[in-house]
Length: 365
Image 1 (cartoon, rainbow, N blue to C red):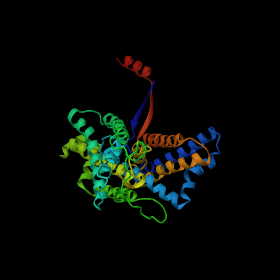
Image 2: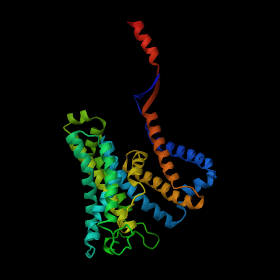
Image 3: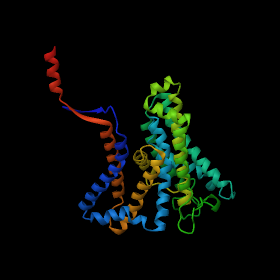
Image 4: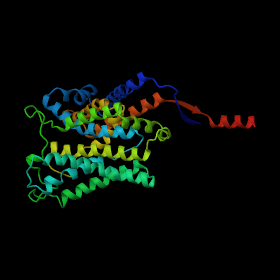
C-alpha cells in the first residue's frame, strides 16, 4: 500500500484565497494547545503574542522594523519561486549585503558625505546579488541544485561575518567586544517619524519594492516570462524565452533585495556590524512568500503577520515566561499548515494497494 497525490483537474480560486487564512487559524489553534501543554493560559498567551504588540505606538514602529526585511526578502524570493528557481539562501545574501554595504562606514570611517548612505544601499544590493550569483553560476554551468548550494552558502557568510567583527573589522576602541565601529550619522538610515518611534525608511523601501514587483509581474514582458517559465519551461522555450537567463535574473534579483534588506537592517536598527544581525529573517521570509501566495501585495500582509510573531514572542518571554523557541515553533507550524493546505487544494490523496494491482496484472496476463 502506498499514498499517491493526483493533481486536481480544476483548482478553486476561493480555496486558493482561503488557504492562508485557514493555515493561520490552524496555527493559532495548535499554538493554544502548545501553550496549554506548557502550563500557560492559552488565551492570555495568544493575547500576548498577537494583540498586545498592536496596542502601543512604539510597538507598531517595532513591528514595521521587523516587517521591513521580511517583506523585502520575500518579494525577491517570490520572483524566484514563481520562475521555478529555488533560492533558499536569502539569509546568506542578507548577511553579505550587510557586510558589503558596511564597508564604507567601517573602512573609511572618517568620510562624511550625503552620498555615503545611498552608496551603502547600492553596495548592499550589489553584494547580495553577487552572492546569489554563485548558485546561479553553478546551476547554469554545472547543473547543480540551487537549493543545496544557496543553503550551504548561508553558513559561509555567517562565519565570514563572525571572522570580520572579531578580527579585521573589530572596533579598536570597543573594549575587545566582537563588533565593528559604530556608523557615523551620515551612514544611519533616518527614522520615518522620529517623534513617535524608531521605524526607519527600510520599511518604505519594502513597500516600494512590493509595488514595483507587483507592477512588473502584472504589466511587463519580464513578468510574463517569469510566469510562463515557472509553469512550463518547455512552453517558455517555444516562446523564445531563455531558462538560463531566467535563472540568472531571478537569483540576482532576489539576492539584491536580500542584500538591500541586510544593509537597511544594520544601518537602520543596529548601527554597526556584530556576529548576529538577523533572527533568521532569510528563512522566515520563505514562510512569508508562501503565506502571501507569492503575490507581492499579499506578501506585505504576510510580512506583518510574521513580524508580529517575532515581536509577540519577545513580549511573551517577559509577560508569561516562555522560551524564545516558541516563536520558531509558531513559524514552523505556519509553514507546515500553509504547505499542507496548498497540497490538499491542488492534489487529491489516493491510497493505492500494490498487492491488489499485482494480482490484477497477473490475472489479465
